[in-house]
Image (cartoon, rainbow, N blue to C red; front, side, top):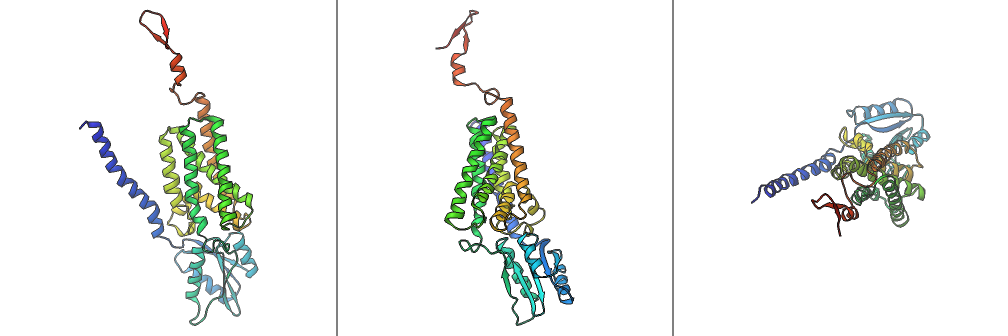
Length: 340
């Protein structure tokens, strides 16, 4: 057997287990290590009872980041502004728990269990869901399940634009148009049909479109800088790392350090946070994720446009069929004879 096919066969044998290992590490490791890490929670009230509740959170080895509030109204406002995931309100009748399942059903359940463990035996802590998930998606599963399809759509857009040979401004406009249509279609499904989103329709469509554009721009930008190898790099970064590190199905603060932070720097995590903010929290805390996505868009499209200016006719070194057909051929007599 020739040496080249042998080397390719060995490469495939080694590459497939490597990719499986990377995928399992990216997806399974964060999922197996879910636990609160500096999870923002609130304690509302004054006096020894409130101090005792705060101390109980602080004694959990850095699991919680405690914010104090004067009363229940201030705690509710903090939840609605996404400053905390929930709050314990200390009253004369005992503690009450405020949660926001729309921020994270997993965190809501975790706080309910944690506060219930500290309650006196035989008592049940009242729980109020300040920002609940919509009736069409009570478990909040649609938002989490939507990130991977959006990531795949963005990767596909960037790859197709590259493989079709689109360059410069034309490529940028194509990515923008495709992302806008994805935003409209995805919002029609998630909001209008499934009832899983509850914010402004066009705002949600814009958030989805911006997410897809950031992903597509990143993939096309990598390809503009590295050639077709950039498509593979973009796919690994977005689908394997970006999707698994996004924290959309749980919360960034539940993922191992620094996975949760890294995930929010990548488009899938930033897109999930942005969509959650505009869908359930009136746009509160949307500035950071929107800025992150905007940076990816600017950097990616800048690379695409600059590469198009350097290669106005396509890839460097590429020759069109028409140019080949009309090129003169040296006949060896010193004269050039046209082909055809």
